[in-house]
Every structure is written in C-alpha cells, then in structure tokens.
Amino acid sequence: MEERVFTFNPGPAALPLPVLKRVQEEMLNCRGTGMSILEMSHRSKEFESILNDAVARIKRILKLGEEFDVVFTQSGASLQFTMVPMNFAQDGKPLGYVDTGYWASKAIKEAKNLGKDVRVLASSADKEYTYIPKNFAIDPGLSYLHITSNNTIRGTQWPSFPNVEGVPLVADMSSDIFSRVFDPKPFGCIYAGAQKNAGPAGVTIVIIRKDMLERIPQSLPTMLKYSTFVESNSLYNTPPCFAIYVVDLVMEWLEETIGGLAKMEEINRKKAQILYGYIDSQDFYRNPVRPEDRSKMNVIFRLPSEELENQFVQEAKKAGLVGLKGHRAVGGCRASLYNAVTIEAVETLVDFMKDFARKNG
Ligand SMILES: Cc1ncc(COP(=O)(O)O)c(C=O)c1O
Image (cartoon, rainbow, N blue to C red):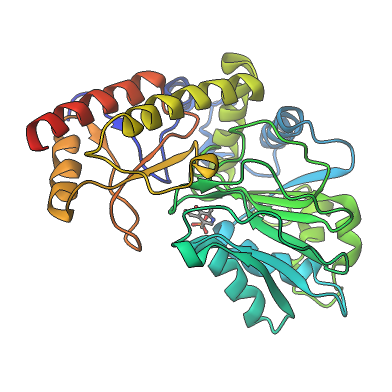
C-alpha cells in the first residue's frame, strides 16, 4: 500500500502523524548527538533530559501535584495487575475491585492468585458488561478500590469515578489516559500501557501518590517494587528508551499542537458523537452499551450477522480503514478512537458504514 490508511486499531494504535515524522527526522541524528535514540546510552544526559521532559509533561497535562510520582515500567499493564496488590495491600484490609469485563477480571484474578483477600464490590457481568455499576457500597476499611476506567473490549467507560472517601482509588487507565480531564486527587495509583493513547508498546506509565509508597513491603523483589522505580527515576536498569522518547513526543504534541487535555477531550467527544450519532440514527448497526456508559475511546457495534461483520471488516480494510474487528473474546466490530485518530478518519468511517449498509441492508 502506497498511502497511509486510517487506523482504528485497539492497541498498538494510531500515533499522531507529526510525531511519526519527527521520529523519522531524528532517527539517524537525535537532537545533535550524532546518533540515533536507538543507540543512545540510558545514562547519558541527553536521554535523561528526554525522560525528565516526558515526566514533566505528563504531570502538567494531568495536573498532578507534588504528591505524585510518575515512573516508567515494562511488561505492560498486565504486570501491574500483580504489582498493585503486591505493593499496596495492607495487612487485615481487603482489596476492593469492580468487575467491568475482560481486563478488570484479569486484574482480579492476579490479586486472588497472590492469596489476597479480594472483594468484588460490583460487577456488570449480569448484563454482559454493557454498563458500569454505580451506587455500590464501599467499605472504608479497604486497602484500595481498583477500577478499569475504560473497558477496551466491551466499549464502556466510567462517566465519573466513584466517591471513595479516604480509600485510595487505583485505576487501570490503559485505554483512556490523556483522553479527558479528571481530578487525580482520589487516586493512589494510575497505570496505563502506552500503546493506545501515549506512544508505542513497550512502556507502561505508572502514577503513584507518595503516601502509597509507605505501604510497600521491603521483602518484595527489587524489580517488583514501585519504590525502586521512584528512587532511581525509572533508571534502575535499562528502560525502554525508544518508547519513552516517543511518549515524550506524543506528550509534546498533546500540549503544544492540540493545546492540552481539555481540547483533546473536546475533540474526542466530537469524534464519539459522530460515530454514535450515526449508529443511533439507523438499525443496521447496533451498539449494546447503556448510553451514559458508552466509551469515547472504543466504539463497539454489531451488524445483523457474523458473515456481514466479517465482510464489513474485510471491505473496510480494502477501503483503507484498518483495525475494525472486535476483540476475539466478544466478536463483532470495534472502532478505537484514540487521541491520534482524526475527525476526518471518523467521518470517513461513517461514510463507509453508510455505503456498506445501503449495499447490504
Ligand atoms: C484496559 C486494559 N488493561 C490492560 C491491558 C493489557 O495491557 P498490556 O498488553 O500492556 O499488558 C489492555 C490491553 O489492551 C487494556 O485495554
């Protein structure tokens, strides 16, 4: 294929074109060093300044106060399912979880595997995870309450976060971090694999409120302790330098080209409105999610039959619209509208959907 396609992949996902061009420009000679970022020592002052810039931008964008640290880890959000309970469980205090689907269930499974006292306070399994549970009781004696802010596979998103009154919230924000404004204060920890809204695969962003560090058992293996990453500025061992560099560029784009998180949220709202607005206006495509809990990042939709869904995905690909197949666990179709997906891409998708419905409806 000669031209670039419109990418609706769930992750790794679309990256902003100006960022990709910048990576290309700097690939052989990164900022006057005479070498590629891929060749640079992680102990060099040039790399450390890139890493520090990424951290500073993340803090500014999310309005994180002095009480928060930002670190970069590896092994994806999936390792965080284990590290969070290892680091933050307190003796005699159960761990609260909300089960909103596939990734939330995996987080619960890992906490249980460690033998922790896990309480699933609410679940939307009764209706195939098509909504976000609300108004459930939160015991003030919990170590923390874990939620998945956006459910990539089921296409649901917490419209607002539960009121936890003293219990630290812990959130897997892998698929909606940097997509909307929120108040970070109730959060003890936020983690997100970068490969959806923040950069390439290979690095995970972890935000930790400093008071949470006091809970970490000394006996944990060094690489599984958040304090190791905080104390070494994410440089205890060789970090994923290239991925961190691209995260820095994406953060720069978000701040300086888009104009910050409120602007980004406005664009994301518009994109979601275009697609849900069309889906709601006809009956060939269907979205099963409770409207108030619909994700602005991952829009799932079904067609009248699985054959039509397969045909849709294939024909869309031929038309330059890629990544529309639903997750293998649930089937159907899904368009991921992460930050780097443009309004033009969504409009092109809707035009294609209209055309496909006309021909096959
Ligand atoms: C919400 C959520 N959590 C966790 C994961 C797993 O992330 P990783 O592959 O970085 O371990 C994903 C991946 O798609 C996700 O969408």
